[in-house]
Length: 116
Length: 115
Image (cartoon, rainbow over all chains, first blue to last red; front, side, top):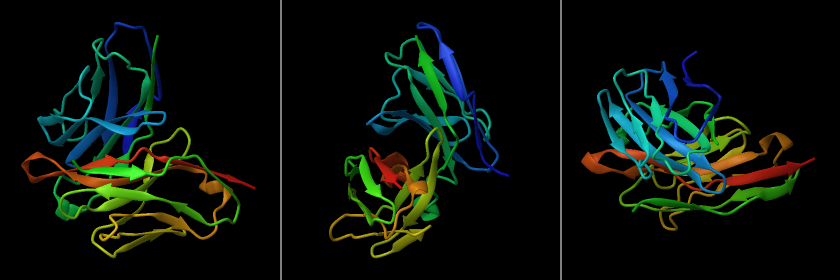
């Protein structure tokens, strides 16, 4: 079955360490997204990529970095510069950026990151 | 900029009660509108969508109608079940640079259904 795989489900890190969250999709989707979810704040867009080797900052990109070297993969690195990294991180994908697709998002099951 | 506003939760109902979760939007142009549902510990799943004014999206007994005149997309269900307990997100495709559109979400509304 096609889908999005995020790993690991739970991740623990010490303050000051960088950590990379994995996101892989086998849906042949062009566009991929990273969202951060905090209680009471909904989903906030961190980064998105509409095509391989290209990505754009979302609303809260500071302290994060991404790469898109393969269509299937869009890893997110949470750097030590991120002030409040503890959160639930969701990866998503869809067919592409054009409105003509009206393409809904497919989500992974998320990674819960705890930094102490 | 484009945005979505949802009613705050939690919404607490008894089984078989009628559900309404309000959603209004601000957008340039005519965005597609979506409702997603998130069960505990999981990612979001598409519940329903509407792509133009007066369209009605429906799925699993849930419905929402795209109302351009009131810029609303309220979610309704005639008789909720305990299994409907989840967080519901209203979303639209927001205009971004280069003529593309990216999804943007409301804050989510938690629904709790008691037996």
